[in-house]
Amino acid sequence: MTGQPIPVIIDCDTGVDDALALLFAVRHPGLDIRAVTCVAGNTDVDGVVRNTLTVLEQAGAPDIPVARGAERPLIEPVRVARHVHGQDGMGDLGLPAPSRKPVDVDAVTLLRREILASPQPVTLIPTAPLTNIALLLRTHPEVVRNIERIVFMGGAVATGNATPVAEFNVWHDPEAAAILLTAGVPITMYGLDVFRQVVVPAADVQRLRASAEPRLRLAGELLAHRDPATSGDPTPTGGLGDAGAVCAVVDPEGITTERLPVEVSLAPGATRGQTIVDRRPRPGESEIHDGAREQCLVDVALDVDVERYVKLWLTTVETP
Image 1 (cartoon, rainbow, N blue to C red):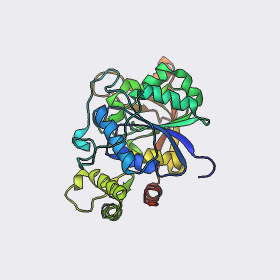
Image 2: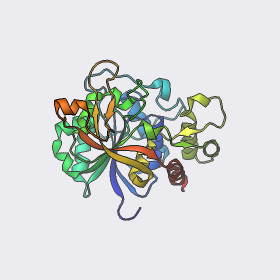
Image 3: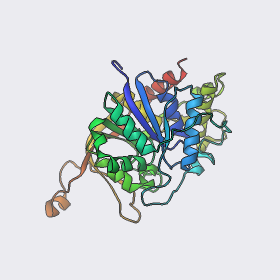
Image 4: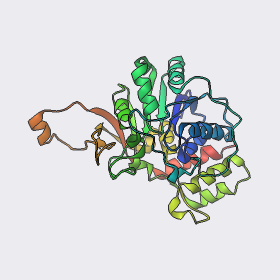
């Protein structure tokens, strides 16, 4: 990367892989983290705030403002993922309580303030359910004039994880995801199709876990937790997960994207929360008979250079 650092705001539900994203973001010289906002998702919102502050402290981050956001989706109840991320949302690693405190304004207020105050347009990186972002866009639509792009971890072209077709972040708050797609700014969807591919080799995970540096040991333990299928293995591989979306901001050439129509299924039932990505080369019978519907065009990540992003993440996190 060349030139000035990219001003970014991370909206997260920390979360094991959100923690990996934060560990990377605070170390990369090409990113200027203006704020971090917290939303319910992987665990309850108060747990997310605690985990976020803990990770920033462990990472030796500067005094980045952190704000508490929505404690539940717009319509749905809270449905946390403790079965994946542990009871505390951070792999139950027994991390100390943070000495840092969140700012005394809510997430939407902080988002508006930092976006409008930035001398350069801000890139938003939501790695969580999109409730905070939807509330921001509906409450303060003027912010879009200073948003460069939204790169969100969410959705799936093929297979879901929360349901057969829906990815967790979008499924957790489908209405919020639908609002995001109408933001009127460039959007990149870093979905499960690439999310699942970026895996750190076992030898690298083992090296991090054995480090004398607490920050690197934390990274290794988080990576080890991310592979429940090999939880008994002393040297498991580890998925970067949400951290890949931050890598995509730093190094967009590492993903292959296609500009495609995307919409979110809001209907009750088996498809609720599905990101419907239209990859057809031509209109079908529906459009021929009923007319084309307006759909949002999104840069959808369809492939990723795994080795490139693993190297980028490791080099950044391990640089003294």
